[in-house]
Length: 251
Ligand SMILES: *Cc1c(COP(=O)(O)O)cnc(C)c1O
Image (cartoon, rainbow, N blue to C red):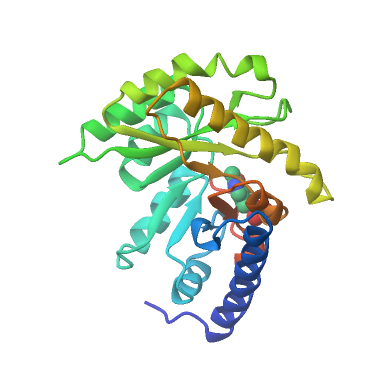
């Protein structure tokens, strides 16, 4: 096991401090507590050395996009037993077993088929625990975006039977919503999409009593301050924390 490079640790530490202070400012603006916002380090296409350096800075929650790339890293870093791995990328249903085994939370649940597969994969584990999931919504209408359609208010009704079925699956625990809005040069332009995700969460909480959705996974390096102002409870930060991605794309 190589010791992480001290300069790399220093660099990531400084970036983390900047992000934390921006989160604090944004939380104050909207009368929220910064401690209610999780900074998830998105480590896709980053080498182990970067993850180890971030770990040395106290980062414990890492987000990955590609099941196989993640599986490799998770095995290699299995000695860091308190890391929490979260899936943020699109999951092909044939990768369900791998994802159900490796991750403690999936942000990118975008179909009932995937929900059923993850549920049964999780159920067949030894002493199974429910897998925490977030429903990924497309709140922009961009065709390139994954997620269930929710950019128009009259689409929200259509989410109810899907959400109800997910709630009926014993080995999934639905706690909130996730979105990936379009990328703009001006982060203010993403604000309406973050607001929309929050409105959908409030709508679902109203329509399905007892569902108690709390999580809003929204905001990346480009726009996390605006996301926190609009209620993000998880921001998914890649390059602003870990630097440019270098590792070739896996699958
Ligand atoms: C890559 C990725 C991120 C992080 O993006 P950065 O711009 O590097 O902060 C967040 N969420 C998802 C779903 C991603 O794929």
